[in-house]
Image (cartoon, rainbow, N blue to C red; front, side):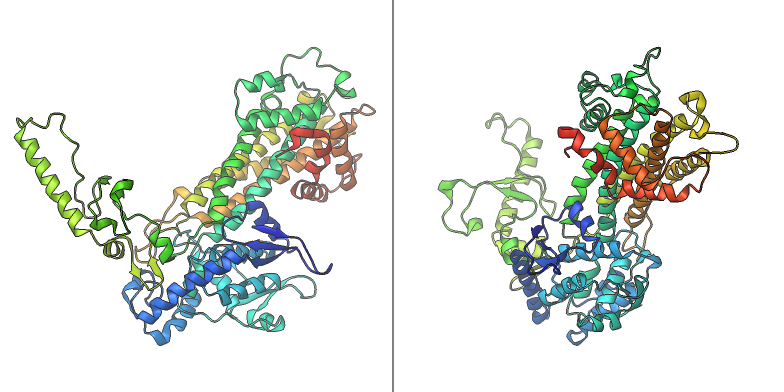
Length: 626
């Protein structure tokens, strides 16, 4: 995706050019806030036109092709007449709009719509440029359909949620009214489109299927999980550093030599961050007041943060790379390929080895080229055997007979496949039109993002698990040498007693939520779709896990800042003093008991929006770089 920052007036938003190939998880997450408009790149415009031309020519030819003039799933053998193709697509959208549960929030609906636009921009779905541009206008004007969260099994794509997305765009179902008094509410899609001056999308052949077949719910929610997980993992390093400081710990376990001999990238990154936060140039006043005298080593929750936080960093990095590929992948079915794209591919079953002095012209199959066959071909015919070590050796007659049989099969294969177009049409392809082909495949299957998001949830959960152990050390006087539950006049005041219980409760919930949903599968659509990914649930629960982690880190920050009050007037490092000051802008010290929830929510927002991390960035130098 390409950012276009030139604006005609202050009222206009910056524009992100969508090309179908370069969208990042960070860009998609940023789109959720509604501060950027979309536009198609010129290359995407050309690809969409080419892809639609393939579909139109096939419709004109009258050939029967799945998804264009047939039923769907088990009904794929039912042919539909040309005069009902538009109605066929509308019926598909209506029947598949079967989602349940709370609707996606406005920000998450923005991500879902933006990502579907990005996938359609690749040109492999066969949507018309006119309808794709209507989708972009709807995004830019905030015309966002109501999309229930539940109902997808993650193959054949996220059919139910994407159908609800399409339903609003064709002028049916619900749509968010962003101009309603008191905040967004769901209204009638037809009324909101009319108010904004938008005509509903009118579906042509294949366009309904093009709008609903893919993994965009999984990938859009997953992108939010990834970016929030990346942020909270950095905030966890900050919280850990502050906790280590107020518990009078040491940075010895963060020495570079220790981490260089176990050189996992994330481990080294975390160790360097915490080391810099605690002793950037010299020890703090607080550290100098005790200098770790009389102690040998800290508890694991303080000493092993690089190893535990580090694998979360590496997990986020791995999942982000995989998800970036998914964001820019064509996940439709069937898929559209132009004649040029087909022409540039080799046929299945073998490679050609072509010598320069053996080729003249394009008709390669009629010129007796040397061929190297890789395994059996599509019909199961065997590959040519390797040459014998001694060509005069005929003692092994049985082996010779087998070689002769193989050679005969090879000669048959060469003679029967002289026509490249014939091979392409009947082996590689579902249907060949005048400008390209339609092919059925399985790119809609959500196993890749489903597995990745299950992995993300497991990795980031451990950030909260170890943080909860540090909170325990902060509030337990036998472990901290601080007042019990970090409050004066204990007994009369309870301080952080139940705040720690909240952290413990969320960590325990995460233990259930991190059970992988993608290990499950259930047969659907009369066993036509007999293996599914359950990726929608993987995405939703990954967000819940990340949300819990953000809350636990916020509680640790509150507790560590409160612990610092008991060390005053001693100061910690500049970076950690900046964090303390930021937290105190939202939550004052606990001189006596008060309602704790608003403070937790306020500091959680500082974590979630990146304020905690930005507070320490000026002090980190190279260690603050991504």
